[in-house]
Image 1: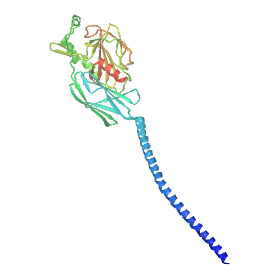
Image 2: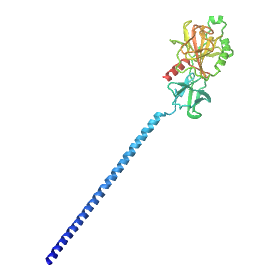
Image 3: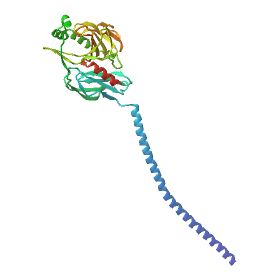
Image 4: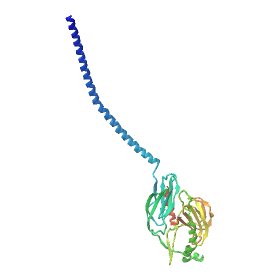
Amino acid sequence: MGLFIRKDLVKILIFLFFLILAGIIFFILQLSFKWSFENIQPEKELYTETTLEENVVLEEEFNEESIDVAELKEPFFTVLLSGTELEQGDTLIIAVENVPEGEKVVGKFNSKSFDFFPVEPEGKLMALLGIDAKKAPGEYSLSVFLSGELEVKETIKVKKKDFYVTKIVITPELEEKGFTSSNISENIATKDGVIIYEVLGKYSFTAYFNQSFIYPFDEIINVGAFGNIRKDGGVTIQHLGVDLDAVEGAPVHAINNGRVVFAKELTVFGNTIIIDHGLGIYSLYLHLSEFKVSEEEIIERGQSIGLAGNTGWSLGPHLHLSIKVNGASVDPLRFIEAVDEFLK
């Protein structure tokens, strides 16, 4: 009996030993797991933070790219000027690009309004302003408005141009026709000049042209510069056009599309054609020998409108070409060159 009890006691002690040992092992394993978890967890948090930072950078880069794409899709309204310092007789060209659909663009120069006309590519407009040969030198304000809102304001400086001074020539042939320096000047002031002034005083809101201007002849030989001041005693006449050499009967071509608003013989200017190109822009062709078009006829750029001649106050066969821009007399050759260059 005693032996049996001792054996049971030994079993119980062995059981308790293994139970305590299992508890110790479990405790050690729990401590080991806790240590591992605490040391691994910060690494996971650090990885998460780094990933977020990378996402922020990528998102910022994406936003910048999105802005660039938006700017490409909706370009800014821009205004381009051919210059801000011009001489008497020059032409100021103003172009606006990226005009929003349905918006209206207007301008003012020295408090006088001017209009724009469409040119290629779509969304681009242009305006032509003349600096008159007699415009007082100084600074003038230029403003461009988009649907009534001021977008651009610039100061345009007009400088004095030194025009050549020459003598009024009256040949024996002109004397036989009754021309003298004094009656030429008087006729321009009271007759021919008044008739032309009335024609040029009308304004067409339609632009008949949408491309560059061309020369009236294939070969241009300037024999009478624009702006020359011709004098004889107390008589002074400024040459507000350019004389181009031509043989009698040479075809004269229209410098752009337009409408013939005048085709008559004048005393001093001879057989004269005036073409309205729209928006206050006119071209004048003087001393013709023959008309090839009639008033109110719509003509095309390069079309033959008449033949060069020697009518009126003329020293020989030639073409006097003038260009008026809203009443301003500008150098025709520089006008054609400037517009063509700006449209390229």
